Length: 396
Image (cartoon, rainbow, N blue to C red; front, side, top):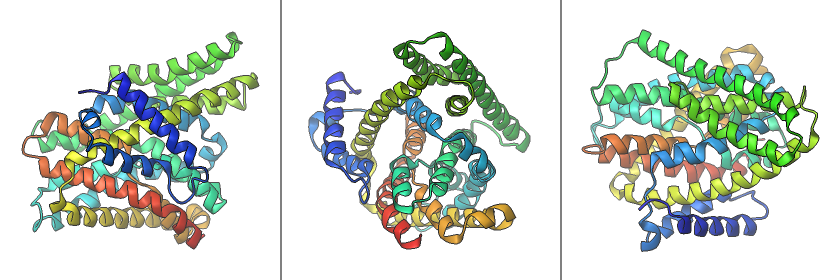
């Protein structure tokens, strides 16, 4: 059974209760509580009948979450940290998938006997970061928005990169296509640059359209059209909907300080999208918990934890190596800050979407790989979100 209106209302009410009861939001992030609740609710027949699809996550929940994060992202901070953000979200992800995939393949022998492509495919599922539940905690606990900006900026862009890498590796895994460096790079550039250009263009157009509609309700309506419209247009023409939505939001944020003079517009936009963000997070993380139970297997819990630890080690190596190579970044980011950035890159909605996409088309014979992926994501989501506050307090 898909998500019904009654299911949705009940889940939203539960989310409302959790957000209301959690006032400090320091030690235990709300999404973690929601995931645990979702796991418990999965044993209730009424909720266990809910079927979460990749379409639900990708086309319903992802566009508003991407848009609200992007348009709130300070443009001056994006420009300040653009080098390390773009490197980690592109070359950093490619390096992470390559290294982590080979390590998983090497160590999987006694457990799963994964092929090399299987190890790389699992690594591609685990590389996109989703720090939505920890960014506010980072800002509160460190008092320095630099780390939160790098973590959030990286996550906004690396989702688009991850989908391209995953799609290529999935084609290789299922023997549906051959790999060539030139075809991969051409597809990557087309999808990424096409989505970026489309987002910038439509974000600019919306910033101009705001001037022609002085009614704040209609301006908010226009933002809904932009968030969902640009995502679906981009996907329809074969470029990255994720990057299109992100750069549309970033462009709108940039235009705030330049040409948009209607102060009530930002106030209305913040009020509306704050409600949408809380609602989407409530539904999304409860659904992740409900869906996760059918994938969990006690027999692979130990290896899933090993994979989680490996992913943390590889990410730390990539981040510290990156900041050491580039002199400018070495001055800004110490090993302590690199540790926090590493730990804050938890897995979430994009990883779940990739798992469900794999499950929808190639579930037969791949149950163990699906279970390992989902279990590792769940471990990451719980442990990393719980550990951000005490770790940042200790190191910074």
